[in-house]
Image (cartoon, rainbow, N blue to C red; front, side, top):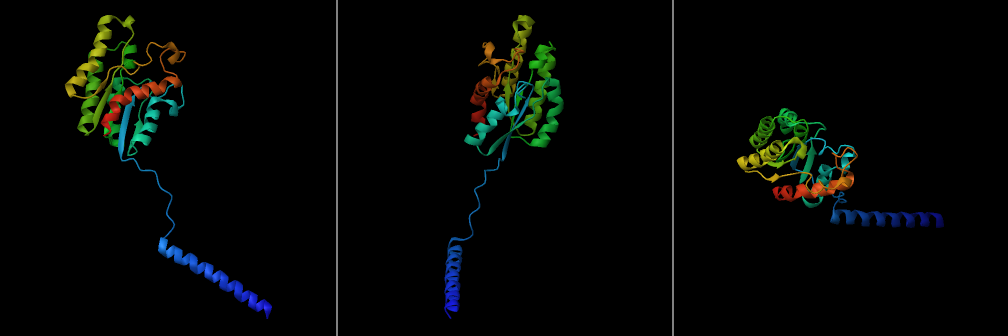
Length: 222
């Protein structure tokens, strides 16, 4: 008798708990799903060489990846796709850009090429023609363009060095696009900012490059 009474009492208590939980579920609705990160709907495509491909470093340490992290924080609707390749010339970029535009459908294209052209002493007109082609293709795909320039050492001769820098200025003016005149400007005179090859920046220098480019790129995201 006592056992039966105890069993009924336990059953009633369990039923009351379940009814209370059911009532709470009906009022509050299903348990809310964990908030999802905002899906990026806009893309920045970076077309560069080893200076943008984080040569000698982990990919996450490069200025392009660091730019992507900043975007997640300040502009969560944006993402970065880094299509930079070590050793790339402007000719290589001009040959690849159509495929990358089709693959990524970017709203902004950052062109950071020319360093390898300069190191090889390639004709200035050839470099300018290739950059011109990339800009035209990006604009034809309805993407904004940020042109990031480079410089060559003075031992290439004053005429070549000045002509090399002038290519970027002329193209930015012709197409009315923003220009970062020299990617390495914040660190160029600091030997400690470069790896043993004296060409590629160390990890500690990458945030400075990110900040340098961001001054022009950031306003384009609005």
